[in-house]
Amino acid sequence: MIALAALAAWLFICLPLLYSPAWPPFDWLASLSVAANIAQTLTGIFAALAFFGYLQQKLQRRWKIERYLEDERRSAENGGLGMGAKSIIHLMGNCSMTEAQVLEAVLGSTKIRSWVAADDEGRAERLFFQFSDDAWRKVRNQPSRRITRR
Image (cartoon, rainbow, N blue to C red; front, side, top):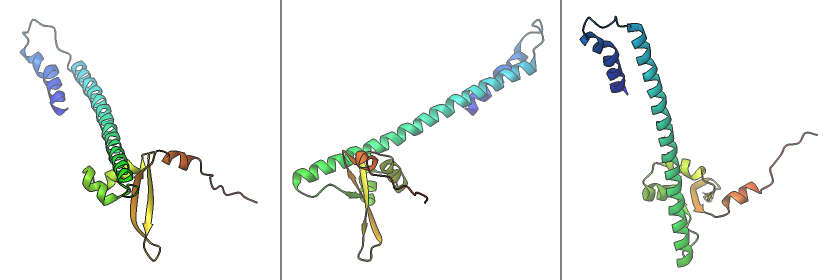
């Protein structure tokens, strides 16, 4: 982007110096205004492209974890090895993501169910995730807890 701004500045400021004196006088203020408008437009375009790239990465991470957990659940059910629940450390290693990326992808998904495993004293020890076809329906159909004043 800086290179484009420099090119625009060179075109509108330095290029008129190469013209012959027979040309009409050059309006420096108008050319500077045009260069600023071009830079502003390019900045907006690059910002929009960066935003859509960010959204695409976010969706790809979520789809990757959903596919992985779905495959793990299917293979675990077919092999009789449980329900295919995986911890966050397991997902970090197999999906090549950081903890924050895994949590963002998993908690943003409507197809992944999560729960906490407690130790003997009742404290949270691990966080497990499992692919579930009806995870969103279960959450959506639960009655809400409303506080009523009397």
